[in-house]
Length: 406
Image 1 (spheres, rainbow, N blue to C red):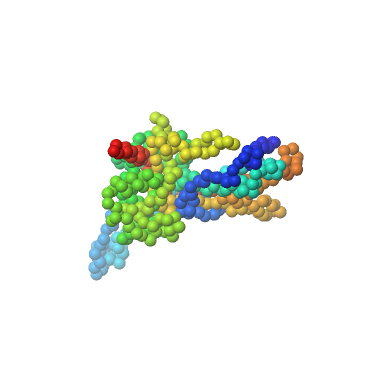
Image 2 (cartoon, rainbow, N blue to C red):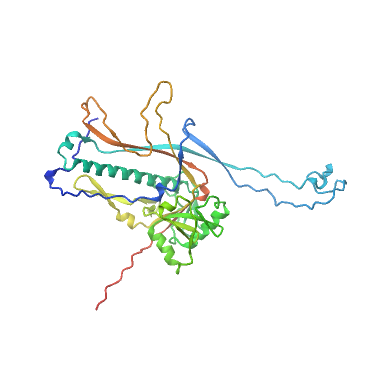
């Protein structure tokens, strides 16, 4: 297939000024906080992981008083007819329960447009322009992993609830957050924005469900969890609760939080700001994801601008974070698997490499190349029941005040 070569680099003839500006994308704790491990090779395309669930005896425990053995077969043991007497206490069997969950490996890739060596000959400040192009590509790596990790944590949440009385929820782990779905959340409209009362209720559910193991921090012996939410939602929660001096608590958080600038918990939660929080509209029959950017025409190509649809979306999602909900697994490069076979080792984290692939028709002289990044990961569910996705109303946060008349 022939390359479609476009004039990517600006030339002096267009009188481009000496400064070349570049818009950058925000970074996120999603790329730094969740657990990351290595994919297990030679285990098939789908791996099953068992989770041992909490179990209890079928009946309340019976406690018997220890006394001298009488030898008359009437002492309360497991088999009093065999005269064990009080040497054996009453007994019950604790049953085991397992939940089996499967996960697999997925991949995608990104290419830059092809670049012809002749275009570089005439380009204005070609090294600087190439550096700027490469920076755009690396930002796309950051954005791709941020989006992937957020979506996979969102998908892995065992509770996807509506901000409404009773917190009605869906517990499916297999739905794509980007899909058009009536099942991502219950087909009920939220009746509230995100409040501290909702978080208090969820926090107590998590503690009673055992999520106090490996929290992000502790205050006065109680676990502190994390929540990814937008700046607007975080500000509203704090403003709604009046004076806040006594509500902030300094805690020793996970060592992963300190580089992110998160130092204090607020009423049981570390607020981790995610200004790309998932937003949805209700179409009347399904939840429709609204993305943060939309394409508009630039002088050359299409640029991504802040989407007005995203800013005006009806609903937003807050994600209560626990380190043990899921783990991202990245495959290791394979170069010499055996049998005299050799492969080019690949980096599956989206690291960009230059490709100049000769072809008898489309690139016979090796004068056309492009950048390529490969992404691959699998999401291992660990304790999905400790993850909560909360869909809530978005309210107008801009307060307008008229200027004084005199």
